[in-house]
Length: 293
Image 1 (cartoon, rainbow, N blue to C red):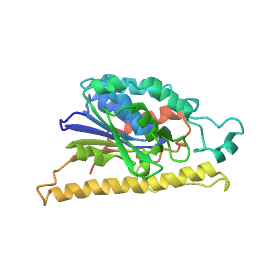
Image 2 (spheres, helix red, strand yellow):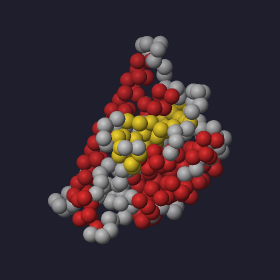
Image 3 (cartoon, rainbow, N blue to C red):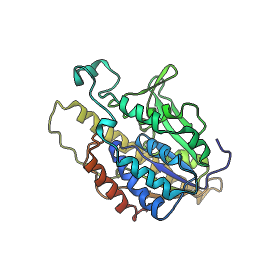
Image 4 (cartoon, rainbow, N blue to C red):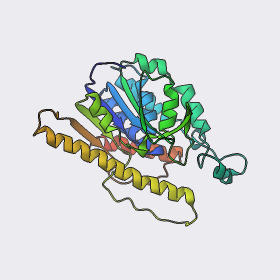
């Protein structure tokens, strides 16, 4: 890992299929404005997006954005997860997740070039959580087995298969930090763009259509939890900026926040190509608007 403090950081949140919104935002920021980042921080689907961008050398933002868009243009539900075979969701009662995400694991292992990440000149932070101890681990561009840590971070809690690393199971870093903003601040970045897949301060309506639809109820529970974690991340960042006005040891950090103007009405585990394109378009449109933290 480089000892140089990063100048500009990109922080990408979790959100499952809504990570397509992040790809849309970056089409404008990196693809058109050619805004580049020497530090990329991600959790959950944001970890996948961050790692994928990190494969393109620093100084080539347009190419990085184009490759990320090309990636999302090929995503389908079948490439991410499948029902357990045999017996479908009944088998999940004896498994570590509702769905089998081996297709996603294979894809990440085949597509993520750790050597390219290390050679890109970018720093990387990927957050995951141990199911055994509850501790958080932050992988960087030099961490051995980088693909496995991206798999761990992208393991949507309960729904997707956790990663077995060492003697432990590791899962979505969103359990502790949906938006790994603190990692960017601790690394020394003073110019940070944060992309959220939802507005953590907005009320998101949810209609329970089937009282026995356990996967949908689990997703909603996780969504509520993630919203609270996101709000805490942003409040802490705002507090640090307030303190910078009073205490010299707290530096002022420029933070730009990009998020949907309205809830994205899609299941985070449904990777329908048509819906993904809508979210990419929404991200591109919303990227012209940001809030300062």
